[in-house]
Image 1: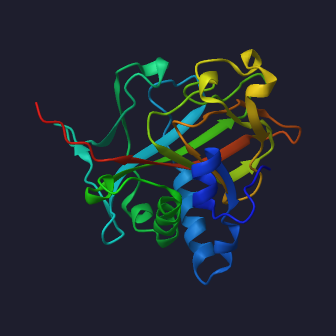
Image 2: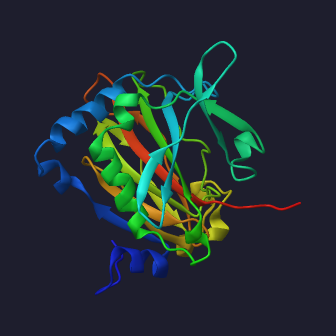
Length: 262
């Protein structure tokens, strides 16, 4: 693991473009384990990703805002369709070639999960590692919270992320927190140079790979500054214990409010 000695995580993120860290000690606090079990239950009930039902991927997504001047976090309302379905829309512009300039709409997190104190603490901890100019901090910071589960039970199947190649997200900062990893082959994280974006893992020059690693225990985490690096997680296959392979993670991204005057 590469670190910047004597520097805070925020300073290290600004210097290297990515950080690895561990929030598992949070689970030792009174009530935190019960809150974590509630998050596990949310993952157990995630719906299949409607945009690729063959990818063995399950997910929910909700949005919120942070007010930088008070450091308050608030959830944004869901979008309700004409037939009463609650959804939350997600847009990455040209940063996801699989859904180029396409809006996707996912089922939102449950209200119980939105009120989970441990989740709020994680969101605010990640925000404290980000860095912005002063003008940006006069407007709310948009927060996207993804719950994503990769799950397979067929030894011939593979669960893949979207996009399934080295990429950047188009959001200034993204953080990943492992929730569960069980009986998994694969699920390896890669951090690489920005010019590696758009390539398959095997196409990247060795000196363009900054680090490869696996997240193995609950709340083991990493974060990236999108303009400074690219990243990727490899597909998940069934391990040697039979049953199912599960890799669940919370992904949190931070985007500034942009005002466009025509």
